[in-house]
Image (cartoon, rainbow, N blue to C red; front, side, top):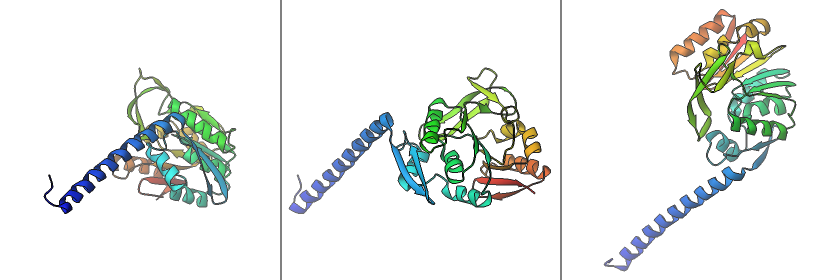
Length: 258
């Protein structure tokens, strides 16, 4: 028992604070469960363009959380730089589209006419297709194919519910995921290729050599500079093709033909 009224009040405040924390935790868990069962659509305006996103994991997935809380595109500063550099481009290939953050920007904000998206995860691809439809981009092509150096198979080696965009794959002849190449999948003009494939960058590029040599597209990809050996190899390969590079962020690099 507390010896004084002051001690009693202090203990009471402590208990109330703990109770409030428990209530907040339970409330958040209920909200997450309801949100993941039903999802919802959030809307915002970007530079005069109305944008909508269906975010089924808006309470748990980091990318969807950012879109929901900040009411703008994920990596909006990177996308803004791309828009400034490539206004008027007509054809974009989005490798590793996730829920369509970049694809919606390319189509709805930049007005890209030909948009091809690759997303191998079934549930994520369903969200991607819904987000394209919400933003009037139903003509965009969505392909379930995983891309690599050759036509084969792969298996998933990492999946994070809090960051579906960090899902990673590795080549495996007995894997569940079909692998194709950009050289096989893409015909015709390409102005820009965006690549976000969590460690398979070199494989995707190896399977796109004919396309890159033929069309000379700009290529923007996520590649962490602390993966120095991988970054150096990719950088050298683009330099040999006559490309220059610029970092748009700590881990987004843009290669453009000279």
